[in-house]
Image (tube, rainbow, N blue to C red; front, top):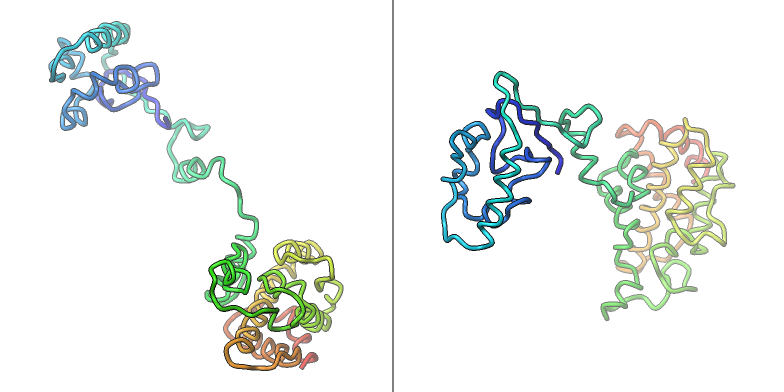
Length: 287
């Protein structure tokens, strides 16, 4: 479908495989005839070769049937209407680009045509963060973290309540956004940098929606750093939750903030320059 061929002298167009006959392949116009042509011949026979003394007819092997005869007559009529033009090169047009020329970009765009864009991808994969943290955020976005709700669906042991607030059922969005513990954590994490107004409120129950709103509320120069800070905060909450579930730790916001401070310092030392713009003052004061 992507490539259409315009026949000139026929030397650069495959008779059986290319879309040269009214923009269609032989298999589209005469499927029965096409199945009777050996593949080694179909992949090498040019239009110029095939039209000399109707050489294409000799390529057909098999039992003759009424349907085959009907396809043959129809195909012969179409082929007879296509003249070869000596000295004129064949043209192959790539339909998926305005120029008619192939490019990897146009092929890639066609591959995903009609697909639904996954909105968090850029915030996750283009933000500075360790790969394990970005992969974690990808799992969060797809609701693939092993929180109590997913464990319960598979009849696996799970906490009866959120390990951090002990008030509501645990889901990944509750744990990272609407949990009382998480709300306090985000407020302390963001306030020293002047972003306290961006902390999730009682009505925020989706990390992705809240995160998108956070980015909309800051200047472009701070977007990258704030994206890294959100990933760091979510990763810290997840680590603290796991400490409580598996190691018997007591949930404390001060402990989570201290963890976030240490993590942010390590990230900045590793090259997270944009994170240092929005997190340095915040984390030094919050500890």
